[in-house]
Image (cartoon, rainbow, N blue to C red; front, side):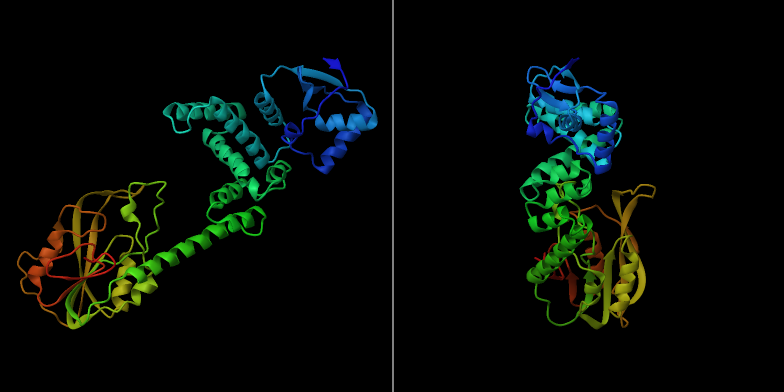
Length: 397
């Protein structure tokens, strides 16, 4: 330890230090004026750059108070920056977002130092080990460290529209971690919304809801633009497989399931459909467990009388946590008037058939309908051409 006054303030390294609140600065100044500078300042050996004690140094200089200095050996500026962040994480008065920013900067800095291509298996392993080590060091989870890294990277990414954002977060007066990360995601495609989130004029949740509504409206416009012209006349047999209002699966999570991306319709829009049913008409409405209540409401809205439910038992199925496996789909049979069946031999409401493409209904079902009914048949929202049926829908062939 030594006493010295020749100290260099590096502006970039100085910016890494979270500023004190007014009451903290006042209390520190009162303590130093009363008791002197009890803790030594820390400088980078061989460079005389101040690493710790910027507020104490300023107060001592202003009041002519002596101070002690200790040195640390560091390899380069990256190491100096990491030392500052690690040291600041020892403060007790950090806000959660201040601590997250410091941890995130450390994590990203260590990742850059490795220097491997970001997508290489070796680098993924290194990142995992780095996150685990920092998690142990700072008493948080590995997932928290990785999220902190996203936070710090998001602050850098949004610097173009919020140059002082890092300083605001460091001072405890910036937007939340979640808001910053979401703003960074929006930056390229929706810069105005990103700026509104960072400036506190809108919440990230509000923006996400608005964009989701816009996306829904766009999908419905696509339906209107691509939908085939409704067939003329009425039909004696109608099979309906509606585009139920399923929530879109994010392609980041399931990139190989693009066949699930198709426009859907709300219950109100489905209820408003004109069903071209003859005076005496057979109707089958396909649905799943989730939409059974809605399907029954739609039959009522269309003026159809529910009769029974046909069950397609298919191999496999998905099983939600804590629930049984869902391995069936349902075709609700309803009618208008008093239509008759041609043949009721081996005419059962349960049948087994293999799966096809997503949302495709089995050929065995159409074979059954053709066998037991006569007249004009319509397949609404069909995904492929079916012999003996007129197809109608955006994927009709």
